[in-house]
Image (tube, rainbow, N blue to C red):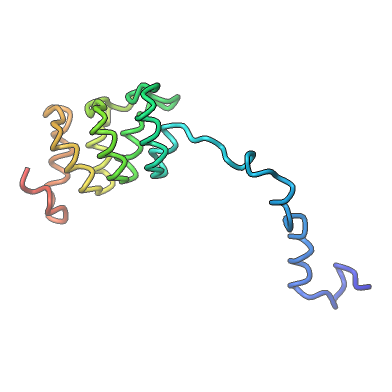
Length: 150
């Protein structure tokens, strides 16, 4: 029998032994334990359209609620660039002018990351002009052609 530390032990044998505890782990954990429900903020940040849609349809949540970091679901979706989530939230009537604790609106977050389609949606629903001037100016730079019309 070969020792794990011997010169004869191959790299793949060592890898297999170190990962052996993971083999069959799915049989030890039931599927229900793996299905962890997502909150609206998390679902919005990772682009889980169906989860966001379900949260909206249930109607039990404040869609403008800030989490412990002071961000709303719309802020996350705008910053990351999940345009389908942003559109869904906008259709549900979220407030597009709620700023982060640092004063950034969803439009500012979207523009800081170059998320043109998100910024376009936000401009269509009517962000307050004084909250969006800096973001609009940034979006009017030459590389952001779609928003030059605003």
